Each structure stands twice: as structure tokens, then as C-alpha cells.
Image (cartoon, rainbow, N blue to C red; front, side, top):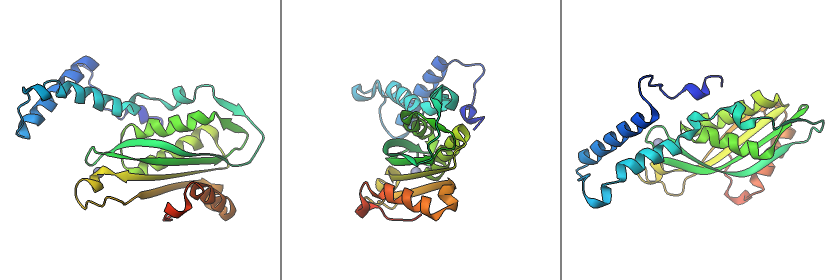
Length: 212
Ligand SMILES: [Zn+2]
């Protein structure tokens, strides 16, 4: 967690503007290698657009968990499960840099502290907006919530579709990948785990296909 914001290679001698121009040059070269003419009208601004778009899609590297949560952690004595379901999630797979997207369901049982609900969605976004694999994304979200709140337990489930499976390779159009990360009472106490999974399934029980 501590070094999570330092994953991006640091170019000490170049500015973000230089990096942007270099990325544009690389995209232009990519277009050439694909057999395209980067000077034709439709592609003229494509390198610039892709450079900006990629920077935006990976903006999670520049986010810091402390900044995101800020002072939105509150003392609270209640010990019931808190859950935010169906958090929209968009990420890029690190193997193909193609999108994977779906929903995250995040829950925890407080142990004296709660966090503003919108912050849970922002934590998902911070880790999703990096090059990822779904398994690690799920773990990182659970770990971050453990670090911030030291709760009794945390459960994270992500259901996602991967364009690298749908558009290429095995071309499985309707497959969904489900990953889970369970900590504390969510892992050790079957009642808590069952309640969590029941709440996750509550959205659309018929489409949820276990795997946990
Ligand atoms: Zn992939």
C-alpha cells in the first residue's frame, strides 16, 4: 500500500508534457506498424487523443488512498455489516491493455470506525484505474479497507467481462469472471460470509454463478 502511488516509472528528466509528446510519437509509430497512414485526416489527432485517453484511464497511479479518504473516517459503535453493491468498475487488463468492466460489491463490519460510503466507490476507482488483473484488483480493494478501518472483516466481490476474452482469443462473449477477497470475519465466520453472499446475490440471484 505504501508504495502504491509509486508504481509508475518516474522519469526524472522529463515533464508530463514531454511524456505526453513521447506517447504521441509512439502511437504514431504504432499506426505505421499497423499499416496505417498516420497523416490521413481521420488519424491526424489520434495519437494525441490516445495519449490523453490512456493517461486518464490510468489516473489511479496518481491517486493516493490518504487523499481519497481524507477526513471521512468517523467513530461509530454499530457493528452491523455495511455494504455498497453494484459499484460500476472500469479497468484495463495488464496483459492486453484492453478494458474489463463490471461491478464491485464491497462490504465490511466496523470495529469502531466507519468511512463515508462514497469513499468505497472511490477506492474501487483508484485501483481500477491502473493496469490490472481482476484478482489483484479485488485484493487491493480489500487490503485498503483493512488498512484504513481495521474492521472486523471485509468482503469484496467483483463480477466483470473482459474484452480480451470477448474480442480476441477464445471469443467467449457471455462469460463473466467473478473474484472475491474475504478478510477477518468474512473469511472465518460462515454466518457473516453467507449474509454477505446473500446480499451480493440479491441484485440478481439468477445471474450469480458462485465460484466463491
Ligand atoms: Zn487481457
